[in-house]
Length: 175
Image (cartoon, rainbow, N blue to C red; front, side, top):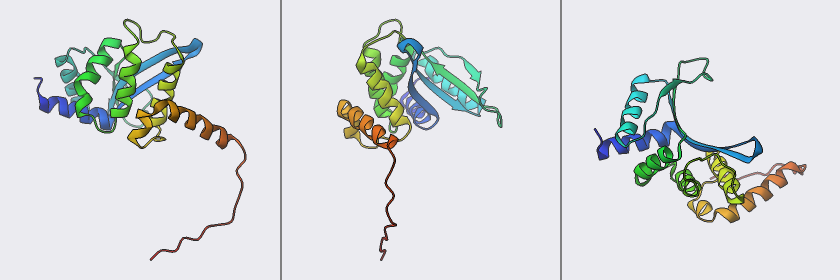
């Protein structure tokens, strides 16, 4: 069952239907994970099969947040499960490659529990992944220079909290 075609397919599903995230819980604990969401049970069963073939056991659940259409979710929240998934898919990822790079760095600091408290870099990584997921970072240089980016992002956020100055409309001449 495991072949390059299936790994490429799963990487495409993660890129398009998946999420790589780190939530920060109360008392500075982290909630990292990888999730897949889709309304097709058949598709989610294939995700489960391919993950199983690389050694990651998951359960398909119903996404209770969806009220309009039945939707299914798969969560990977163990350190080894996330690491195994990202290492297998990394060369094939496109749009989630930056988040995968940061998550692998985050996971490299952990052996058993991904939720333990840690240092400032972990908060930085969590913030960067969140910003990328929201579309705030578009260039590859941003991630490779992530410490500077976090500082810039923080400064931009501070600027956004102060009142904006209104100026007159700008006309743009088009040909």
